[in-house]
Each structure stands twice: as structure tokens, then as C-alpha cells.
Image (tube, rainbow, N blue to C red; front, side, top):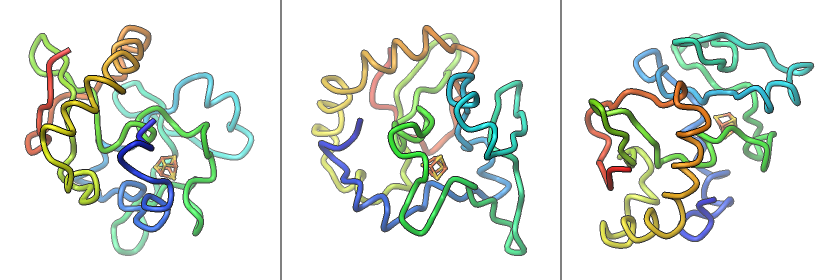
Length: 153
Ligand code: SF4
């Protein structure tokens, strides 16, 4: 979904978005029913705010590494959760509105100009995100400060 501005090779090299400290656990990707049916033989799940996520296990450094992560990148490939296909972009609830944001953590995408990011969101992401928000409104996370708002839906 992001390959016009972020290559799979860049993602596979970085993997930053596939590990979560406790303070970041709100970021874990939501596993929808369709994906859960595909992978439930292989993975265990937890629930956060009513949404299914991979089982949360912290290592000795307090990091929860996604169980789908391998040394070559995400084992789920094109079936990865929508949250992961979209990251570092995200739909978030802000009051009565839904906004499209970008996480400051992805250095590669944040290296693009703001105007290019807004143009990309408008042309490549907005309709897909709108459809997702309509289908799974309960999966939209609350706005968290430091995420830069690129547009209102
Ligand atoms: S599902 Fe894949 S892309 Fe998403 S956090 Fe896990 S390893 Fe990373």
C-alpha cells in the first residue's frame, strides 16, 4: 500500500514498527476476523479494548516483539494486518472526528516533504482508510500526541 514511498527492503531492514514497549502497546496491530481465521493455528491472541491482537509477551528488555516477525521481515507478507500495511500512517479518533496521522518514528517516510506526504495520503490512502473505518469503526485508535495530523476524514 505504501510502496510508492517506502520499499519492502527498507521495512525488512528496519523492523522498528514490529516491537513494542509497554508504553507503546496501544500500537500493536489489530487482527481482524478474516486474518485470525487464516492464522489461528499458528498464533495465539490477546484482546486490547475489545480488539484482537497477537499474544503479548515481553522479553527481558521489556520489549514485545511481534511473533510474526522473522529475520527476513514479516512472515505474513501481503496478509499482514491493515494497521501494518498502513504504518507509519494511521487513522485515529480525535473527538468526534477521524484523522489520518503519521507516526514520527518512521525516519524513512518522515524524510519526505510534508507536501509530498499529504499528496500521497490524498491520492493513495484516503479512500482505503475511509472504507476501513466504515467497516471496522471499533478498531480505530484514540489520537496520541506526537502523531502528526495530515488530514481530517
Ligand atoms: S504483523 Fe508483520 S508487519 Fe505487523 S507488526 Fe507483526 S511482523 Fe510487523
